[in-house]
Image (cartoon, rainbow, N blue to C red; front, top):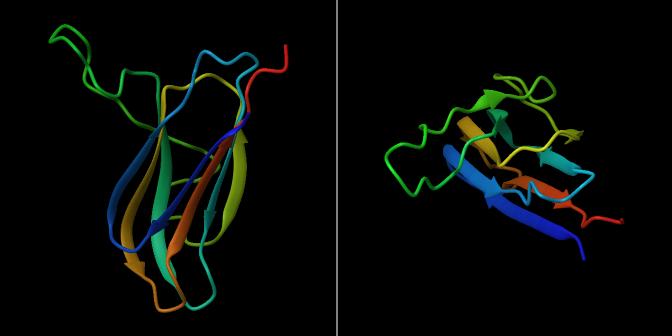
Length: 113
């Protein structure tokens, strides 16, 4: 069964989703939908770190910006990631939802092995 994630975004800030990085082959489809009449500036980032560290010897989370969703993105983008990551983050720096909320969507299928 796939693991869909949908979030309406109406304010600046971060929305984080934890992947199931153990699924092989790894694949997650990602969409940021900016409806007509709404505007925003955003980026999508990935991490290989544990999102919720359980001990002080684990590194702080380092976010790496996706080349498909670079900083300053303003339009609807659909892409995917094929290498295992532990988390996906939408980082919104400016937003006006006059045409409706921005939609952050992720679909990660289960293994077909």
